[in-house]
Image (cartoon, rainbow, N blue to C red; front, side, top):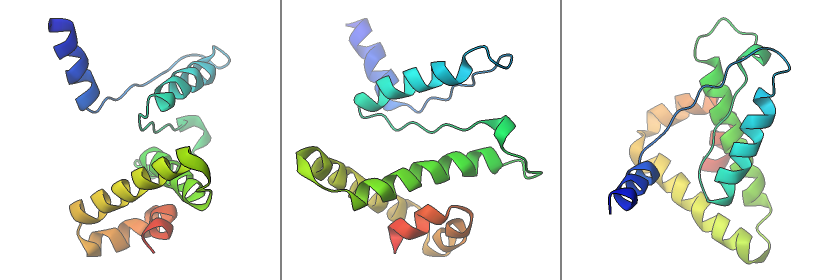
Length: 123
């Protein structure tokens, strides 16, 4: 019973993982393997690479990963073919509805400038 409760807690909470190491140590490979496994289980996974982002703005890695997430949703919303894609279409609509109900309209407009794919999804 404790194991089931622990699994339930794990499945209902947000998680953050930071992977660090020397160049060429396999960080990207590890992240991709874990990401692919989690995506098969319908997790939402955001990734970013700090070294690739040359910006003085401290939130650039966060905006970059959120932009990649919404860009993926834009791509998937354009490719709604087959049963699996219909399920993804429902999931995309659920995400859009959640964003629209939890973030005030004026804030969404401002956020769309920082995360252009979000603006594409909401238009």
